Length: 460
Image (cartoon, rainbow, N blue to C red; front, side):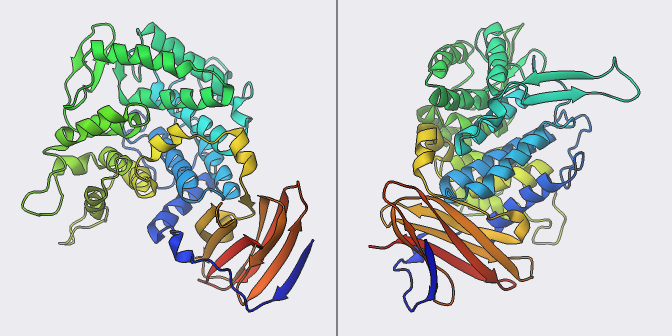
């Protein structure tokens, strides 16, 4: 039941206590949407350096980091906007399944594709309780070149069969990890499937990850791969030889995600590992050449460990030209994904998700919003549920310089009388019967460039 009436009463909340996304943060999310909306085979502004997708700025790394940044934003900053983020992460997964990101297949020695795809799909399941990528054959790769090859081929997986393939390779390598290229195991590559195993354990009521971590940690220690100095870059499986670190990049990337399950070691090592790379001298601006060349890894590391001052200084180097007007190069991985990840993450962002992943039961208790979409020309600046105040706060801003109509549905409201506060002192009133979950509608016409708050509160 609903009624619409003008009223002189505004929602009795101080909205300033609910943080808004910045212009940079909302712009990054719009870019992700634009990429997902591009036709198959179209990769705007993603040009990797190596056409075979074999270098460190390959499409798969960009897509995976975009998905992780989107997941962090939804979990930590805009948790009620399920209808906004679900198609975005799904779109990134579908882009990942196209031919360009997977230059070779999953089954062996490709953990930096298979591990990322595994975590992307498990994030989707965890955040939205949707089993689309858990169904048999949901991750199918079709290989059908026109002028060469042996005819059409298909390789079918789903999230759990993909995890089994990765576990089999870790087992073959005596648990030091799965290879990301022939004969080489990198620490960073194996953090993504480990995080996934934990999320899948929570969903399935199993405990695969504990046994894996026990064997994996022992194997790393045996090879002397991890210390409070920089981590070893990789280990050659057949020869058993480790490669000493050449820079801070791989340590930073590893630590940014290892903070989930091994936070004590990660935080204890930061001071020593960052010396010479993230060091301010005589108060001068942080501008180490080696740190900047590894900005995509270092930025994620700093954001996860909550090093705000160092991160802000690093991110001042994200412009096309320097102070003298000289052109500076921003590689696609850094500009499209890693800088975005760092801006959208929070202190211990990955660790907090590891510690409290959303479950089916939790999601069923949480109100959420549907109907807001990126293609409406809107930025979503707020989207939170205040359990104590029994209030939902949504802030949107029109950015496309044209008037637009906004209509969103708030699902899962507990029983009671609810008031939706709109602009111009207008309200909508809804009654949710006892023992039921209700839906409220928030509808408004927005002018070009206008910012509007929607507040839905239960009457006292």
